[in-house]
Image 1: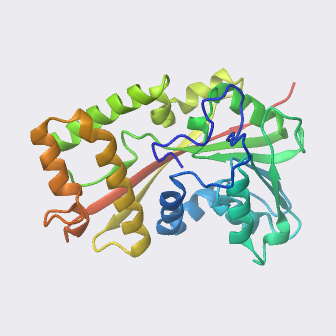
Image 2 (image 1 turned 135 degrees about the vertical axis):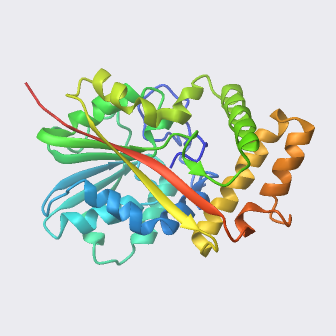
Length: 296
């Protein structure tokens, strides 16, 4: 997911799902936070997959399949007669996903494939759905990637992209002035590390990306996942990792006084730690764009 991290090798020039060009079996830094996110919001994320209206017998391509969570949920929807192609170029993620699926009842419905989107596809104009969850932002040319996804899909099939916008992705009960300072510092951090800082806010651009990719418009749904304190272990794990990362990225760009206030709220050892507040409310917002594919 868009954890304000880039996927491995995302600065490369192709439309690779991830690059990991050295074949490393090392998982990226965000893998643990992503796993906590999938566990914490399992019911809601399954609901997002249900909103895709995948039918029994469908062929689905899961682009940038990561740890395989979505591949499994999609496999549950396609049924015994369907198939999910879980595509990534990270051998570490593919290995993790296969181990997670293991001997699950849907295992024989999933084929794991190490493949770059620029390479000849296993399916061309044949899939019922091409799906990409929280990875489009990391690709160097999202329009080209969406166009390439559309080539995988049959006439009348669909492509779907699930993404977030870092400005609004995770809402916590910060004092308003603290949150405004954090978001300004976060943008400055993105500008310092990337020549495309707007990619971290990609969800707001999905309609434009789909249009520029030549698709006939898209329907967009927004999903808000809410949790209240006391947080369960997966939710707390995700939020604590999120706070630690946000604190590290923004600290050099905050005033001394503001950094002290953030530390009070984001340090697990502080009596004012946000996640220990019995009234704490956390909301994660994500967006789903779906478009049909029409061939002339």
